[in-house]
Image (cartoon, rainbow, N blue to C red; front, side, top):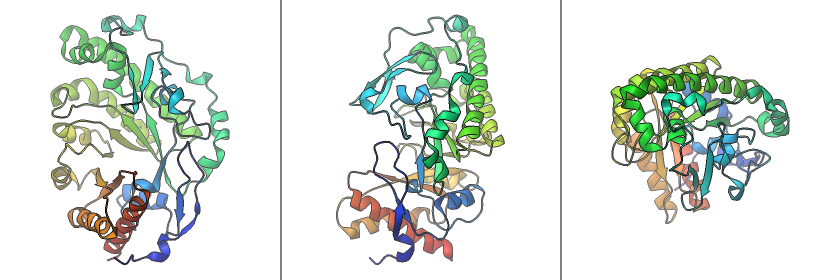
Length: 355
């Protein structure tokens, strides 16, 4: 199929290389991808559907969580072979190659009694880190801002509780009346810490978006009820969301698992977007809440010829062409088809929004 807007799809250079990924191409678009994202999140009309390939992650190794979780993206890349180790709070993580991520070894929790967590947890002093040196080291990346820049925040409130206590103990603490007050104290202190971290991100790196990781569900169901979420987690998450907005930063919740029942609750506290996993009925959710919330929708890169790639792009546009969604192009094992899918969605959405 013929690509419209072929001139806009020309490669006119590359962006600075980050970590071990190949340098990303720069396109001849009428406005920058960053400006297109900004229009989208401001409720203005973008020129094409914002694509995952129009953004980049900046996750510097000055943040211990990024190293422990094998998620460093900056000039001084830390390979996964060196990932793991202590996070912000001295909890030791181990990188698991088969899982493609890190985990805390269960069985010896750092906090054996949540009611006395202050005995075991020391909050880091952010003033002791060389933030300016990190910014200077990554000057080329931070000043080349045609694309939308995100920074990841590991580890969220419930995930942090799990890292301190192991999963079973953390889940119990959320609903045990004898432990809830201590969890509130911890989450209150964590919210202060995360807000200060956001202010440092803003001052030294100026991200467009923070992506806050806090998994709330399994393959089939949430880990806890919405009532528990509202009582124990959301008051503190709202403070973090508000802090991001006060610093002109978009707030994305990254929460894995089936958490459809929680969607209205986190919309209420001002979360800007959530991509979610395919076990959630994204089409239903977009139809129900898409007029007041941004969902990310996954488009799998097909195998096969160019017709198959066009068919995937066309199916996506037929389903979501009149909605406000972020486009996640998933599956990079076929670089040729990945690039072609990106071009087709750009062209089809560009055509749709031009009308």
